[in-house]
Amino acid sequence: NIPSENTVKTATLDHLPDDPESVVIVMRWLQYLIDRVGKENISNVLNYYVDIGWITDDVRAKLLEYCEGITEKSKERKKLVAKDHIQSFLYIQRLKGMNIDEHFMGKIERELNKMSKYLENISFQ
Image 1 (tube, rainbow, N blue to C red):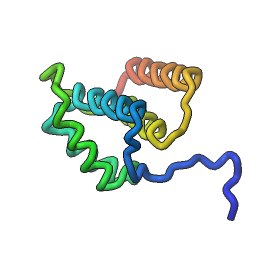
Image 2 (cartoon, helix red, strand yellow; image 1 turned 45 degrees about the horizontal axis):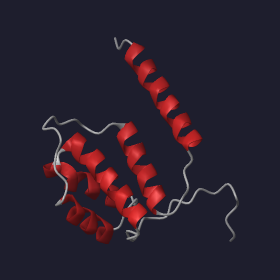
Image 3 (cartoon, rainbow, N blue to C red; image 1 turned 120 degrees about the vertical axis):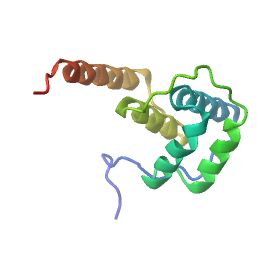
Image 4 (cartoon, rainbow, N blue to C red; image 1 turned 135 degrees about the vertical axis):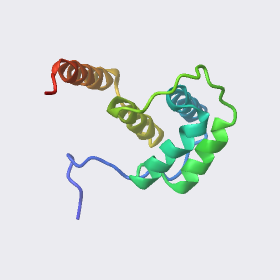
């Protein structure tokens, strides 16, 4: 079977590239997550990404090693929302070599903002 052009690659990230650009992406991604959930909860988030097939155990272990060098900017903890997981997914795709252009990122951001505003305006009775 030959995949069609429209097939989205969703293969698991099975290694972390070690070129300078990839290291910067890894550090930005981890800082993003740590700023939201704290260092003590980062392992749970990465375990979830292993469970859903986005990263391997080896990548998880390597990411936890990188976390040692990252400091927390805030002690305020939040639960991750869909937007945060989408951001993680996009970081993972970049690490897999997928070129994600700014137009695509802007479109996703606008759609997420629309959904957030819609959900805020719904009154649950």
